[in-house]
Image (cartoon, rainbow, N blue to C red; front, side):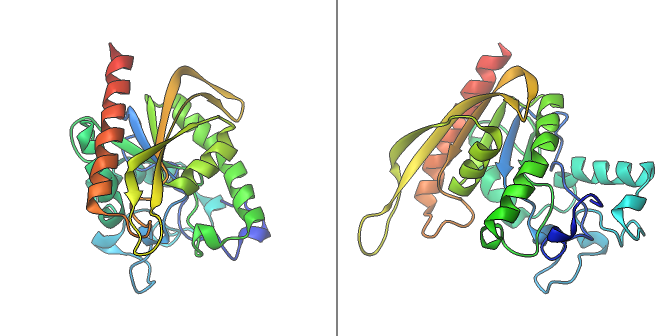
Length: 259
């Protein structure tokens, strides 16, 4: 992380490790996609650094490092194993279990059986919520993370990426320069007390390269406009319908690719 310039100092949680992936990416054929790690991967509700059995991922303090530039091979291995074992230890279940319910419809799971993993467009947690960051900073972080994300996808068995919410879809399109088709889905409409509801949209496309890095197979991209963890007014019924349609699409894509 030492390569980040001073413009990032006030926003990036510099004592927290970069998180290139969550879970067993070496086994995963399906990966959900977000924008960047939550600061809750590193701090509790009181803002204090997680420690002991509550710790999820390494920090400068846990590795007894002054700066990430001082990390050696042992530290890198510790970080890699923490990312691989993330869902077997103390995952941030309040966030991931919402997506887990969707994945299970398609026969996948972060935790058991046919493993899924999670990828973020940006590997760094920020102290300020993503949407409140200056647009220029968001753009630089997305650009900086593009090659790392591409290399992880290229070197993994991932066949399907699942984009969680319109913000992820928008940033993914900017990063990948891939065209995604958008299909309105009436059954995904979020009701409002006054006026029309918020319509649901399904996205789909195919990724064959990212940032100039070519893949040896096409990677299917599916997504939806409602952020299941934070969209205002997301009902259980809408979550179930999204889970059913996306889960079935993931299952069909996977089964078709492995025959």
